[in-house]
Amino acid sequence: MKYGNLVIEKKEYVLLKKLMNLSRYYKDVTLGKSIKKLNSEMESAKICDEKDMPKDVIRFNSTITIVSEKGWNKEFTLVTPAESDVKHGKISLLTPMGSAVIGYAEGDTIVWEFPSGEQNLTIEKVEQGNQKLNASMVL
Image 1 (tube, one colour):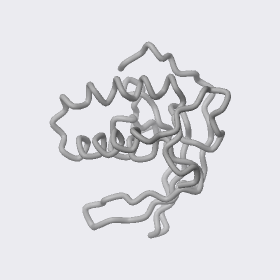
Image 2 (cartoon, rainbow, N blue to C red):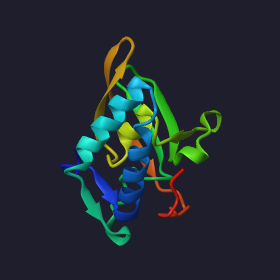
Image 3 (cartoon, rainbow, N blue to C red):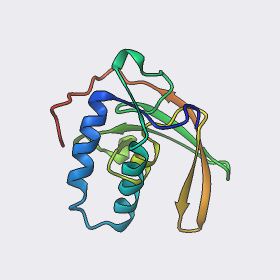
Image 4 (cartoon, helix red, strand yellow):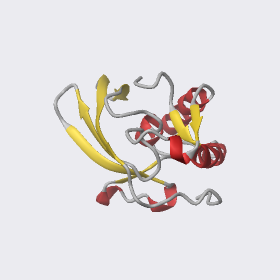
């Protein structure tokens, strides 16, 4: 990891905790496993003020391009569950992919479990969105 640990902005950290607490009511085993891993990683995350956030760290409203070791790539924007729209490339944080990438930085590699086995996915590009997060929102 580029920064040693996940890097998360303070308001986003609060919202992530709220969302993860609500997600325990979902019955999806894959999602549960992803949220549990994220919760564990957040215990050692670097929590930053907005002004101190690195520009290359994935956060809410970031547009990310990931590349697999098999050669394919995928671009999507990480959003809150209420804004999720897979057809338009908007992936909710409460999806396995969304929870897997938040807090990572451009150049980092994550291990992703596919039905055919694990693959390394590299975060090739991170672009920050202009929309600010409303910390009081939950869903």
